Length: 254
Image (cartoon, rainbow, N blue to C red):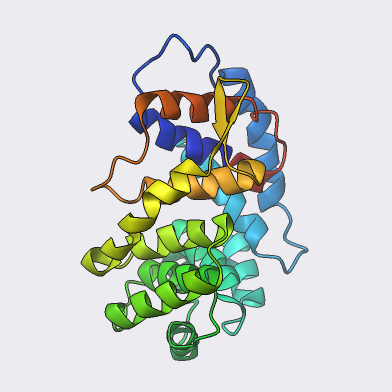
């Protein structure tokens, strides 16, 4: 969350005198063992650890350690296509990034996987997070998204029931995957930004800390036709993110 948000911030920012800190080489060297440890946790059925480890190395433009085949086998062993859509996404994304299909000459997902993902996009009780990760998963396996207009209606209904910042953040990501149909989300952007808190006159964040701030920033920046932040706001968000660079778990770092 930290690295990906800072990369996003770099697209927003020119170098500003108000931002005096940065992610140094020594900071990065501290991150690498955390990513490696996340990938080494092959005794766990929690496949999100693998995803965050791989994602971390990817953000550093480094290949993951050379145990890809074993990691692929672990994904294959513990993947459950009836898991929640977030878990399915972590598995499918990890499989794709490690090129496991070539390494093991096999697919991870099945027809039932796709059926379950598409059913999520048709259930009134699906949360914005459920919808977002179902869409992300279909995107990873290059599967067409069914009936984008219906998914928009579902997202709008969910936001009427839950317009909290985490729910809105997931909806931003989901809408970005819906092409032109996702344009409806632009009407929510201004309201999201004004809910950010200013700290000491030099930082900005959303309630919920790094997790929510990263979710919202990355979601807003997936909407290329909008410019949600002023330069001053972008500087303040970047300053906040840099105060969090001591985080020492893979999920928090990426």
